[in-house]
Amino acid sequence: MPFANAQNAQNAQNAQNAQNAQNAQNAQSELSHAGQGTSSRLSAALDAVAIALPGQVPATAVAQPIPSPDPERALRRLNARHREILLVQELVDGITVSDASGAAQVTTPQGSATLTSPFHGLSGAALETAAQQALAPILARRWLRAERMNEILEQQSDLISFLALVHPISAATHPMTMTLLSAIHAATTQITVQAKALLSVSRPADLSSAVAPVIQTPAHSAAPSGHATEAFGLAFALEALIFGGASRELRLIAARIEENRVVAGVHYEHDGYMGRTLAALLARVFADRMGLGATAPAPADMWPGSGEDGVLGSNHAGQSGRPAIVQSQTAGVGDTRVALLTRLALAEIGG
Image 1: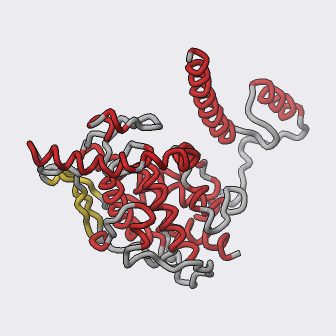
Image 2: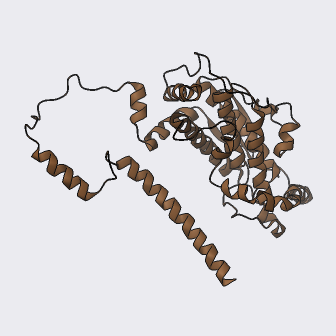
Image 3: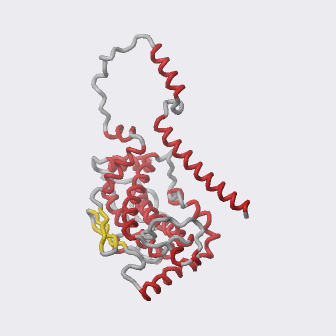
């Protein structure tokens, strides 16, 4: 056992080192020169060459006219952090999260949805019964853990690779598409975090030691499920961008991601239902701001069933094997950064 514990500690350290390396790489790329990363030696060498150049340009000589980048060039040249902040600001504009007698009311320019705890308004014996009912599907799925373990672990930090099974995209081939999806993911997370803070639902492991989750239980609220909200939010965005309509495969993948969190022992089924409902609400707003037709169902029409069976048993399963399309010329219309980025993303997908 000491060796196992030491190995676990090493794995955790490796994960932390990988994250630190990624953070360092992100900072380095932002500060890099044309041929390498930044360093004091390179800065000194560049200064030495610059001073040695003949015919120094007078300080009074400036470019005429003074460069004024067009919107597309300005968007492309922004560093990734600043660009995402501006995009998220546009996406969440006018969206509020407020307390509604213990529920979370999410209001958008296109409608609203009420998110609840699985134990909303209950106490005493009724609360105990509801807790037992909420735990039952989790305990019944423990036997799926070995089969789903690789998915559970990878999906702790990566959802898009699974959704990209339906259409090949990557940062190398579709940089603007990935930038847009990253902003949608961040905007979705921003609203989800606010809803979680209001609901503050105890996790399954807090109710029973029999749950024995196979991954670390997050400290924040169980409802709404962040993974469900993010997976379906990205699925709805990809539907609108690539297919112009509901995709059965994307919805099934998102549903499996959602269910894997129940299998892992960190969520109730109700959390996923609330996450899907929130994703549908936000997706319709985001699609409008991208200048695309919304593919997500109305929040009131969200299917209650969990997992892939829930999708297949609903009236919103979508079309299977839907081919990618070239969007119409009216797609991505607008002068916002989100609309501009959508046009650039559509050019990558259509190309």
